[in-house]
Length: 283
Image (tube, rainbow, N blue to C red):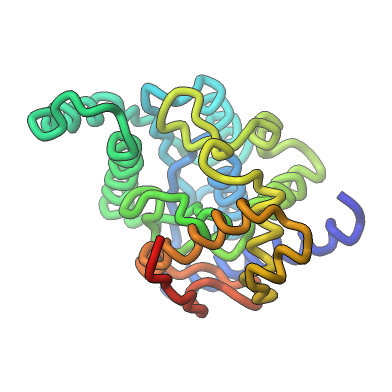
């Protein structure tokens, strides 16, 4: 990243640190928790939170399922150790299988679908909220603006939280933040930064299975949200028609999710919770 990008990312980094501190101080909160998955979003959030609140005030959960890769667990552990934060490993496989057994009379022999995927995210959300309630740790949401825009997240699961740290930060900027956090030495394991993003809710899953690549997606979202460009303007800018249509369709049909999300730290001129996107009649 060039000097201008470094300067911009540094400002973004400092603004998010200030936002976390301000939120906690004004509300009288001291400690935080989140689910550490081994992915880029939770890695950046926990690194920011540790700097903002102090490592001693952060407690995270590692919540692996049968679909979690071994490197996700080791990456998450490595990051927690680098930050000197408390972490606990709570596998969700048994809870997940018990839930599936309870649902089996209803689901029968229906094929594996988004229902089973989302069940895993909701189990994680349940456990994180239990820790939050028991120990008084405020749950930090780790969804980024790209995901929030297109509804790539499970309601009452990975959308849980009291405050969204990255809800106004596009995915490509999350990667910039990770590299900035590692500017002096490796805090976030390099594998977390270079591996393909994945929710790991079924074998071999990658974000690119459901979404355009983030470089393209974020450019379209930025022009549509921040610059209020319509479909015709996006076409004139050279974006692929099918990708534009898919992206805008996702944004418009997922407003019902956004209105249920926790507030996000605002670092742009168009944070979602201050802007309504009209629903369309046909999806």
